[in-house]
Image (tube, rainbow, N blue to C red):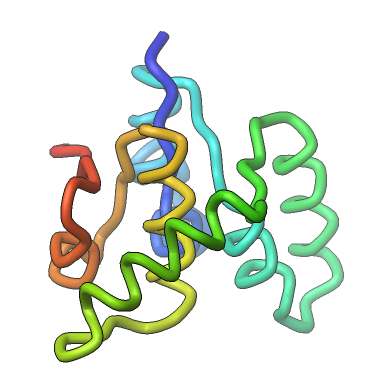
Length: 125
């Protein structure tokens, strides 16, 4: 199966759905191998709900977590310079840089931000 990177908003949408099988994450999991970035791990775990944290930590342990490395920092810096006049939120820039560096399509509900990153593959779903 092809690996994809899912943005934080996909995980939030899953968490908010009462019927998990109706979520985008549930559907994508059946079609792809799911990965997230270390930035997404941070964004999810910065909340206060310990029960949710436990669930997410177990989930992250079961999938591939893409790191923010020196190489992805260099990629992020290039993207930052190219977007300077039309900047996106820093977490989105870092998530996009990791997915771009890893050459993995990104699934997101916020295509408006991520489509500004030249060469980043966005998953249509």
